[in-house]
Image (cartoon, rainbow, N blue to C red; front, top):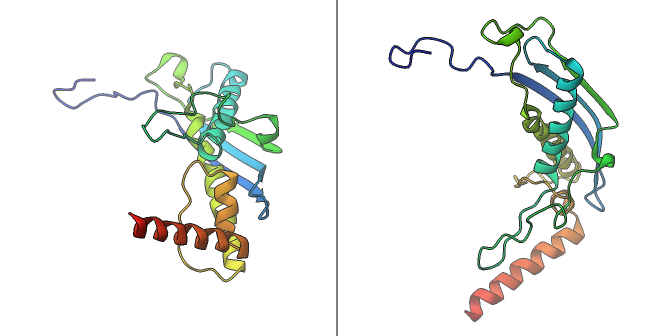
Length: 190
């Protein structure tokens, strides 16, 4: 790459991927099940497809944790409480999609790299957001069935607590009203 002229190929190891996930949520508990995920990755000419697919699968499961479980909690002073897997939930075998398919684009070539490959690393991590978006769509569907058209926020990680609250029923409404009343009482007492 010639940075002065702006010519060349500085990013020869970029790779691309897409994922589609199907989930099922339990509106009473907020728990969810990952039913199916299909992933397609462009990784160039794979030197060892078994290793590359393993990297993609492992990174994807890490992404499931990032987007749906690994909630960071801080003390009032700003110290991080959740510093490792002994202090927050991480993905387990039961979190892997029941049907899990990873495909590599076979015709993809990278003429600027060794053996026409690309750097795989942990790129599949970001594809874990497909589970987050599938969960968001499921919660939206539940809300639509209940006649709730008002916009709502779901943040990552989309934990069971957020899913349960997002499904909105009489119980979650009581909790929301209690929290609002408590906040109002605190504001008045200050």
